[in-house]
Length: 346
Image 1 (tube, rainbow, N blue to C red):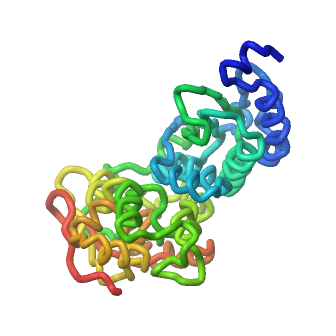
Image 2: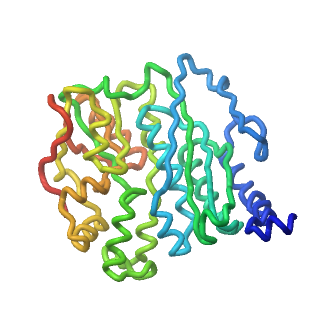
């Protein structure tokens, strides 16, 4: 390899090793529609093989945010790839779209093949859970742009749905039930505030978590974002789910109104579920108001579905069969925006 390039901080040989390490993980996500393999200039997917009648492509992109700083400082890199997939995939699932293929962008200060493999293994795991193929990606070593131990991840997903089957606000009316699917924890939002509170409490990443002494702070906070493909795919092509929301930054406050049309509001009963222990602890330790919590965190709900009252029990049964914990969290009424009633169980 070029000694000159290495002297500038770019280790091409380490990059080649990383690619070889990730191949088996990428191949584990393959779908029959993929044409060619790893190493082409552009990734190819045979869309015609899906034999859709009125296909609509649905795309999404997202990252993991400052949760990556905890992974870096704790030296745990095997779950953040799952987060990258989840944040993208869940965004298109709530439109009624099946995830087809995913691409990742990994930027770092120094190529560490073992670390890169751990990250890509997580991405591949997320893709398998979502049912999409990891069709391509880019690993960019950029000394000077990032410190040697720093990296960032971005993901990109493309899915498809039949046009008449798309979930969208126009299908939501007053008098429908709102069903919440439980989150696995903080998912990938609010971590700048989380890190601030952890620092103020003088906690180390390997300390027992104050809200769950059986695991460390890092293990608890790095719990990967839930991927809801298995739970939501059974409703594709049916009339049972009208619209849905992925609860990310801004919590229920900002995301539920995105699934509603003008003239319809959501009424959320917070007594319907328990505020997760990690969020209870963060609220107390950080002296956060209820508004702070509900505007920053998902409060224990990862996805919200709007369903007709006549379908709610059927939908709940189907969700239970998929292994998801789901509960009626509210209803739609005439009005605008979102209202809260009741008090979280603690």
